[in-house]
Image 1 (cartoon, rainbow, N blue to C red):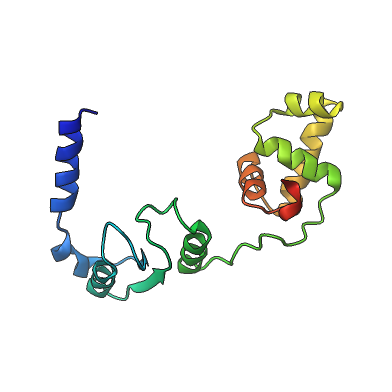
Image 2 (tube, rainbow, N blue to C red):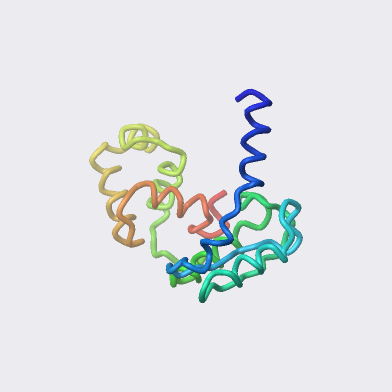
Length: 160
């Protein structure tokens, strides 16, 4: 993207005004805003929440405007609450065997069943069975969920 295009896009974003549409928002709404956001004052977040009927406002500690920077766990916890989901228990006992934790770590590294089998000197079918048992035990539907759980610290702090 050329610098002039980036500048034009930024101007468009800052000039966009949806204030008149906010009273018509009918979806459940939670506005998450960091207390010392460097791009938008917290008063703007409060004003946004006040303009949407029934909206909740949650002020999170921090100064980063981008949700992937700063204390992301606060953001995730607040978003899960807003969606009515339980808080993730980062160090909850899973009941996974040491071998299953080892397989989960390899899934998180992006290895295929064949790669896992070669790394652990087991059959590809055994690797597949381990992953299936991990998914069932954790209540997940996909390998991606296993990988995300592991990366987020779902196996406790001893997996790093």
